Image 1 (tube, one colour):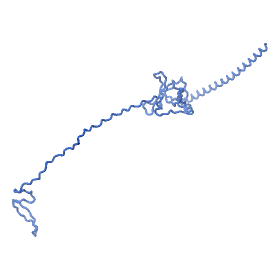
Image 2 (cartoon, helix red, strand yellow; image 1 turned 45 degrees about the vertical axis):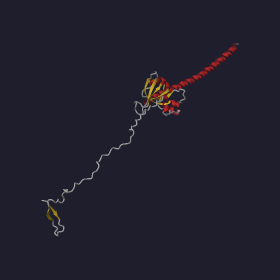
Image 3 (cartoon, rainbow, N blue to C red; image 1 turned 180 degrees about the vertical axis):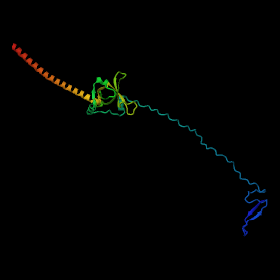
Image 4 (cartoon, rainbow, N blue to C red; image 1 turned 135 degrees about the vertical axis):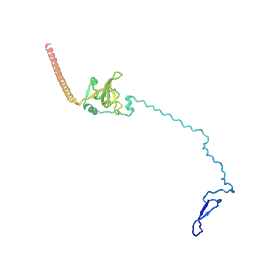
Length: 249
């Protein structure tokens, strides 16, 4: 059974009044029913909606990426010859003064005769002076503070050489380490640093040599004096011979 509740606004009591509704009348809050006599409601027609077309560019040749430039092949400059290497790299050869050379070769160093260069032990520290080749290089520039003897060897040209290193017992590839060969025929003098444990023996040898030197000088001076005596005797003999010859006549 269909019914609806209405609020009787006009009644003094304000109490709701229940009223039965006809079955043909639609209920309040119910969906509307279209009348059988009214025409069906239609929406206005609209053109069918189409998807947006993709944007096209004007006719143009396809873009081709620029070819990558080939890597530049850097050819290293040839290394200068050994004698010109220092000059090519802006390195200037140090030139020692005579005073500096004297101090460097007298402070614990001894001059080694050429016949004993092969006998210089491995690990010894040496200084050397290169020969004057007539190329205008001064003595101060030819003097080298040297290094430690690594070994003695003979090159392919049968020349005797000494391998010198700046760090005793160092290895090739170690940072700051380098070695270089020295040819005997390019060297004028070699000084070897003596072992301080042998100071007494060296001192005695040096004193002995100094004593022999003084004796030699004394003998030379005595010989010179004797030579003068002999000359004077020869002159007297000559005068006596002259006197005798005159007396015989």
